[in-house]
Amino acid sequence: MSERTIALVTGANKGIGYEIAAGLGALGWSVGVGARDERRRQAAVERLRANGVDAFGVPLDVTDDASATAAARLVEDHAGRLDVLVNNAAVAGGMPQEPTRVDPATVRAVVETNVIGVVRVTNAMMPLLRRSASPRIVNMSSSVGSLTRQSGAAAERTAGPLAVAYSPSKTFLNAVTLQYARELSGTGILINAGCPGYVATDLNGFRGVRTPAQGAAIAIRLATLPDDGPTGGFFDDAGVVPW
Ligand SMILES: NC(=O)c1ccc[n+]([C@@H]2O[C@H](COP(=O)([O-])OP(=O)(O)OC[C@H]3O[C@@H](n4cnc5c(N)ncnc54)[C@H](OP(=O)(O)O)[C@@H]3O)[C@@H](O)[C@H]2O)c1
Image 1 (cartoon, rainbow, N blue to C red):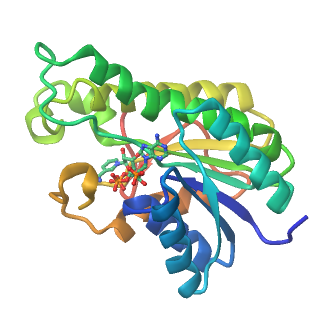
Image 2 (cartoon, helix red, strand yellow):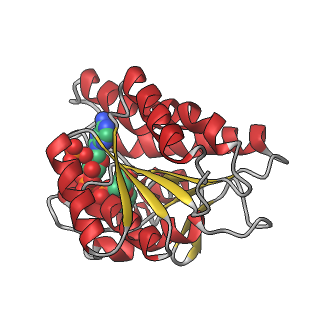
């Protein structure tokens, strides 16, 4: 088994996921680049390696059971265990998403990737995580999934655009994170949700104001929590995000 810390980042071929892989790689970790497209995955692995990262490609479509199973087998063959899983892959589902006009298929597709994809990949990786001395799971969420920020007087300022598929998918993901934290309490596996802030990526047509590297910082912090760190929380760079 490798002595390096082994991480897997889903959706690591671009955007925040790529920068999470780069940041974890800069710690000297071995980083699996989870990505569904072979060409984009290979390009990311090569770029990371050129920057000194011990990166390896992991073919992974988070919506596909067989793909998640094969990814777990690949990580097992490569490293024998997994120390850190960052569930970063997500889709916005296309805008606008007004509740009264949305195609139900859009909601279903977004939940399939952003929520069920996390459950699928986490459970596929769980046997490998259980072999780690200090397992960590980071779910990339968003403050637009905060019900507190979607309601009340401040909502116009903090809720973002109407997005009946994307925003509730992150609320759902936060609830799923809590369910895992409850089951895994006492096992040493810490699982938390993180919000990267409003980052310029494909997801929002590059309208965000933060860089992908800035967005990656919270994931790196939650991936490197000490053994007595929090679990079942929701955090951004400023601290706790309200549910
Ligand atoms: N950008 C923001 O302002 C912001 C704010 C709050 C939260 N977030 C969250 O941060 C995370 C990263 O977002 P981002 O802004 O970096 O978005 P992005 O640039 O669009 O990247 C999304 C990544 O997810 C991958 N992906 C999508 N569906 C997938 C699937 N079925 N299987 C495997 N990979 C899949 C994409 O791969 P392809 O290249 O193959 O499509 C891509 O690598 C997401 O969870 C997002 O919700 C972002």
